[in-house]
Length: 203
Image 1 (cartoon, rainbow, N blue to C red):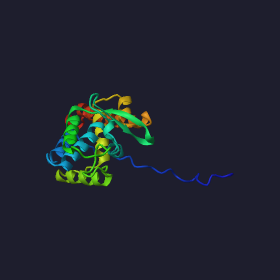
Image 2: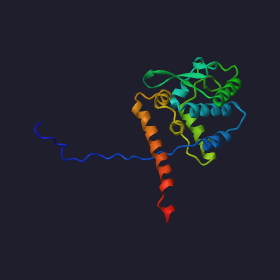
Image 3: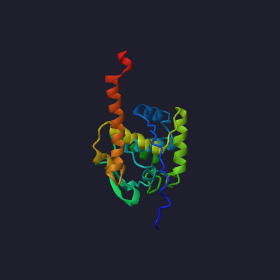
Image 4: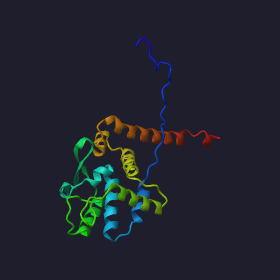
């Protein structure tokens, strides 16, 4: 073509919105409203704790098999996007919740780690419904992606090295992971600078 028919069109500007995150206090509140007894409550609490502790995707969580857990090394093998496997560590509290759930699960026959009483894998819709219910009890709009995003932000604030955070999140590109770190560093740096230089405080 001699002429570009799109030459006169302006580029679309995509909104760059700041996403809300949950902090550790909100997560503690969320976990505290889940009853301590009953199969479904114990299972849901373990699932939420694992999501928060590892920042994995919901699909990855639901596809974990019993054989993917290694308590000796404190790790879980998960299958991410593109069917790529990765090993993620879990903390002591998450491990305790997992052990408590497995004890509650007892003799239920299922290859899936998180299952129903009849052995089927937990469905994403059912888990989202439970998470929404718990969130409403403390006035939060809780979603699996919010937990992942919040955990990643928490780790970025704690200065986890970018390659480690990339490996944990299962990002194909380090640039995606660096986006988390850059946003956090920028916001934290702005707050520190403003506290030191605040025009209002110098009146």
